[in-house]
Image (cartoon, rainbow, N blue to C red; front, top):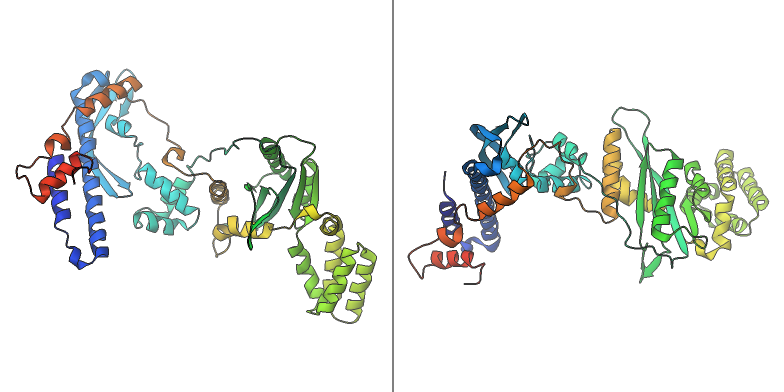
Length: 450
């Protein structure tokens, strides 16, 4: 096996031999490739140092005896594959077996993907397919099944607010659902989404939802979901009687049931859905549309009904279309009246939020999902949209077998610092003034020599 000195010298020589006249892009690409190769070799050598240090210091591995040596392992990282060998130990008192070097460097049993790469793949999988995520992150070296399994090991942390915003008097809740195809061919799954935000603000021509916090629900009782929403509002804005909440939706029963659980809440119908029913009734006749809108604005359902009946009789629309519109308007009359009577009710945007948050990944392209896949990806997407980050510590660890004690780790760390000289001693050349000499001096001095 090459020494760290040999690997470092060869790396520097390769870098200095790169031909920049081939073009800057080619130069940078080749340089990065050499760096990755060097870094994976260096990692393997350093792991070997750890393994040797554990073997040469019995005091830090009390009770552990070498069972065999030379067991190889390949670990896939962002920079390439790290191939190394280590010893297998047995502790007779604890009846336990372990690769102690793996415990020290934080690699789990049977793990083939390094954890930071695993976290990167999981984040990518919330935006792209499992296959594309593998191609983007590691050139397709991880199977779709492995990517899927990784996403299901992510621990979604609770994102707590920094402080309660008790100065806020008005809140809005946008509620809607996405319909997702299932793998088993059964009826499509319904993923429910709620976005809590403060009154819409504008910057120039653009609008945004201040302090938006999104929640998602799948295969959950509506009552339980709304209780979670109510608790989230209480945690962020306090349990107050002076907080008015406008609940925006398309009239679905699960959305309206939120009025029972959200204190001081008022229902607001999403205009998009009413217009979707109203336009076929008018049959592209703008003046008819204005007549119907005036009836809604004047809070006169009788007039609205008479107008629709006239349009049916004049064959502007058929009876089924007119009846569907009247039924929808009647069921959501309170949610329509509030548009004209309460200027604070604001506008609805639930449809766009569902499209952006869920549909882009779950239902915009033909695909089939399992229940666990729907739940995992929808939760991860919402977690990231809320400002959460998937890091290596967020991947659930396997059940740990016993290894070195924490005290042994501290002792090992001290011994590793002086176990084998690193570039300060090893990387020496005799010919002063050469490019290689000054490059190695720079490595020793953190780049300050050049």
